[in-house]
Amino acid sequence: QKEVEQNSGPLSVPEGAIASLNCTYSDRGSQSFFWYRQYSGKSPELIMFIYSNGDKEDGRFTAQLNKASQYVSLLIRDSQPSDSATYLCAVNRNTGNQFYFGTGTSLTVIP
Amino acid sequence: GAVVSQHPSWVICKSGTSVKIECRSLDFQATTMFWYRQFPKQSLMLMATSNEGSKATYEQGVEKDKFLINHASLTLSTLTVTSAHPEDSSFYICSALLLDYNEQFFGPGTRLTVL
Image (cartoon, rainbow over all chains, first blue to last red; front, side, top):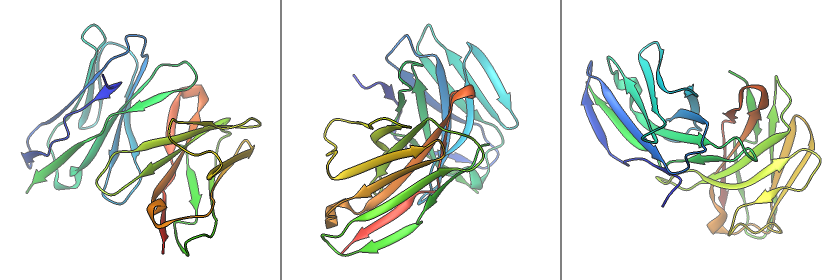
């Protein structure tokens, strides 16, 4: 079983819609959860992190964490074509500074 | 967010030569840095964890004698690809760990092409 799993997509949504990206993780001891965005040919950039169960909102982005279900998601409201990218979920155990990345979900926002 | 730089941003070299890539944390000290490799349309692959003042920890399947990592200061880690071959052509990305916040910030990446 992979440490972090994401649907590779591609996920397509129309402009203005809500894009929902999902991620599951295997280690119940995981404590920190991150969402990165990676444009083609560029390195990942941090969008959001979440540590506690529930929702965390930042502008058009909302991260949701459910530790009981070992599930973390990212919602993008009012999706824009500029949101088209690969979104990487990362999980940290806080032991040995080990981060585990999912394979990423490709999102396309259609104008 | 914190700033991490990489140099060079791209490099072309001949097969058999060595290439050094630098990763710098510009506005914070990073005791831990990570080196990743990413082939086209594939996911990030962690190569090694670099700890300041100690030996790097390599992931399974990564040759430590081929990919030399040095983390001599709290703001600089280097990756040297020795005796490069065309199959080493890839996008190499470093990241630095901002320990207080347990967040990882990525450099812009180095695109290596080995002829």
